Length: 434
Image (cartoon, rainbow, N blue to C red; front, side, top):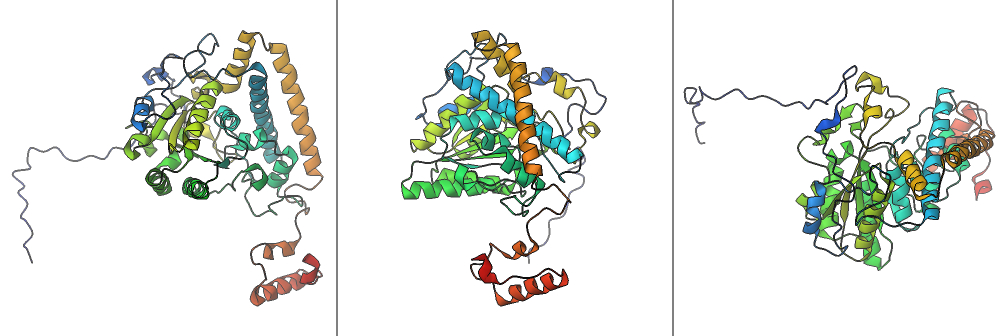
């Protein structure tokens, strides 16, 4: 066995001691906010490569920020998708409906009607504008802040609320945490609370679509914190190697629960820059500019559908409220961060764009907001007829043994019957469920 080298302490005498870097956010509670360290390029200045270009042509955009709406609320530059006014109004309405839904469900949680809720306030464009850019049957693999996709695809609000309340009409039978929806009919893959698992699932689904010669692509969303998970690396590796038709979205809202983006590597590089390391196309987009988000997603979707492979999009945005109803952001960030955020509010910016076009007014916005509040209120009252948290209106106890096995194993059937006897509930024969 070789002898261990002798340390030469004298030779190291002039070396400084090693130190560990621990990322620190720029602002803490009570601090003044100064976003001057952010580089916000002018709108319209970013080139738009051809959708069939080599991936390397997109890499400068990983350090830039694709923007369409300028300070005068005009759509300018090569990324302007030139959407008609009716489409813009529908997009605005869907974003406003998503926010009205969030506000109502937040109040419902505070009233004890559900145990948990997560809002996407300030991030509506990242899901709604993306949904408008995708085909309705493209498979989406969302995280827990993409409720706007379901709403954009026409999923009934009452069904969403039934799931949040885990009541007797919940199509998932109370087996998922609130807000973890699933709808095969709307090509919306089941949300998982395990972070980043949807990325390799999206890559695998996209590979299967390619194997079958289908025309549908996959798209997936994670937060910037989840981009540090190993599943993200696995997904990008598989998608790169097999040229999978998938769009990977990283919603960089600056905070992963109470950890700022530096803990996921945001101090060293942009999250879009990961695309360079994998050799795939990458875009960095103003996530509060609905037109820019739409344009980037349409570009990436067209590229995937043309067998040009995956694209990684970083949506640079801001989480305006807490991580969830269990979170108090005032404990870890300055209260002024939201008000000072330099990219503004996505709903306000799109509304002002429509007003500048002469296709909208402030009065129309106020009237629409009131209408949407009433729409959400009506859907909520309809769902509450099926029960809310803790009121006994839920799926029958025996359903916990269903929907897993085609034929229930004998030992589970014994457990089910025993549980029913102990609860003094008449256990019907299994034939009654066929």
